[in-house]
Length: 347
Image (tube, rainbow, N blue to C red; front, side):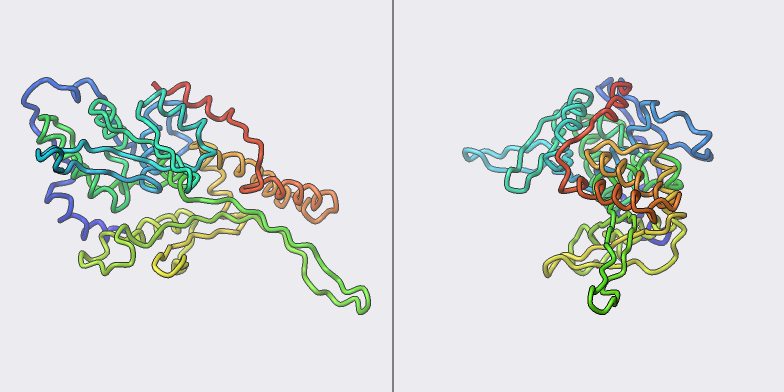
């Protein structure tokens, strides 16, 4: 991970880890808070998640999983050159609309509906909202998306004389803040495997062994450059952050890869060990999921607890797990959004 950071430095605009641009006049950024990183604290000793500043790392993880930045560019309109406005956007699935509406109430922005993809894009484009969002995310980014993020900061500083700092990637332990929760809400999944034991009636031969398993899966594309050759020593690769997530679980094996279609290759983090999954469960008690995925996670934990107590070996336990699985993920029709009460405490 640190080799990756060394390679990344030249593309962070040849800056030292933190640079403050001189502010030539009073402007909007003066009144906006800059959220600093926490360090040297265990999860148990950290302030409660209800502290509003923890929304920054969460949103940073969400953005780095499913977000993008549109930089300002010059276009010709009616034979005149016009500069477009930059924006930060995060894509959600349609079922996350209740969360998105809450985020808009707090942070502003607008929506673009992509009906064919069953997706909704939350777009932060107005100058005030954009600077506020940058201040929330700044200092918490961990992936190659920080390159374009810092380019946006430089553009705003030059255009409006702001003094928004430029940060190197956050290298703190993943357990220290809510970044991983946001990244999981973007690209993680909670799965339950339930395979019933099948026995041939004539021969009594076991045709299929019964198996019950809980699994956490996190997929992310290999690079923000797709499968193009990376001439900048892997600075566009997601391998470093995915290996860091591996180490979060205490896993040291090589990353798995999966190819979707022909030209899309992904890194995969997959965990089934109950002991290692407990690390994630304890973490998410402190930094909760906020998307509709929270519903599947809650059901997944129910199955996890049944397995922990060996109740998955009983007939009643198997029946309950089968019922829980039948209403998870794509099969879910009812959603509980009580967990969004957390956002009521964010100002």
